[in-house]
Length: 66
Image (cartoon, rainbow, N blue to C red; front, side, top):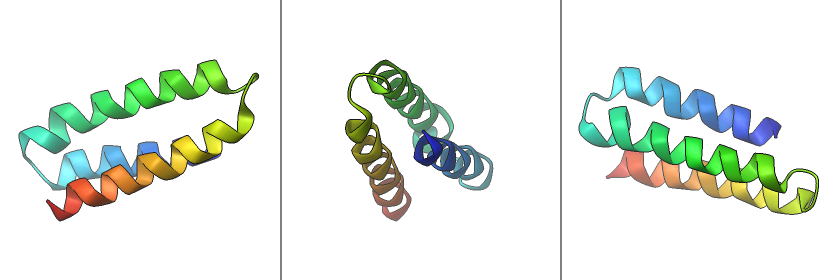
């Protein structure tokens, strides 16, 4: 879950710095969906949450390159 917190700060900071529709509207909603999924998986599949946080940071990185 700490990886999802780190991803939150990346997503939130990019919404302030990069002003376009992708970073202001789409990426925070995408993070919220991933966070909801991580909360559901936390007790039953904890290793999936680790992979999910890595995927979240990778998607953020790819969105910043685009």
